[in-house]
Each structure stands twice: as structure tokens, then as C-alpha cells.
Length: 108
Image (cartoon, rainbow, N blue to C red; front, side, top):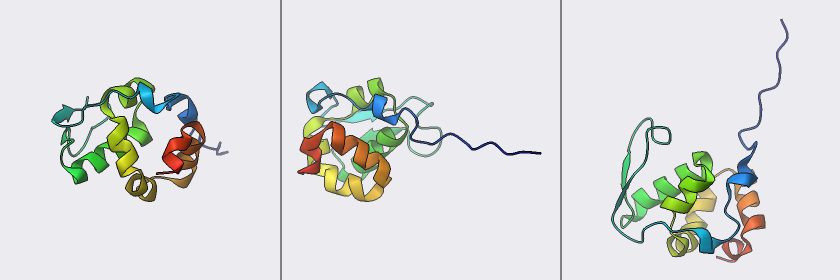
């Protein structure tokens, strides 16, 4: 029996990152409800006005969301504000991809 290497979790991750923060159109306040394909356990509804829920939402989207999900649910100003906390809770290699594509975040 041979074991093949599993593909990296980051396979295709760079393609999911928007080209600019201006593409992001997520709400600044209120609630969002994620589809089951993104939130299959735990919270499915997030209040983006609540910093803890928003942090959970953004980390989940960066790790699992498709480009359209990220554009739809992530607010550019809130992401910029939360970036120092997001980067501490997200895989370094993924953060590196985001900061290369969106250098404004690296300066946050």
C-alpha cells in the first residue's frame, strides 16, 4: 500500500483573493448568514457589528471561502481594522499570500 501526498490546503488559495480591497463589498454592520458549505458546524449567522463574531467570520472566509464569498461578506474597512488580529489567528502561509496580493493589509 502506498500513500500519496495530500494536496495542500493552500492549493488555489491565491486565486480566491480579490485583486484589491476595493472589490470587497461586505456589510459594515448587521448580520450575515453563511451557506452550509461554509458554516457546516457552529455558527451560521454572524453579527458583523460584534468584533468577536466578525473575527470568526473573517478567519473562516479567508480559510474556506471562495472569491465570491469573500467579496460578498468581507468589508474592506473592517478587514483593514481587524487585520492585526486576523493575521495572528490565520495560517502564516495564507497571510503571506494575502499580504502579497493586498499590500495595504501588511501596513495595517
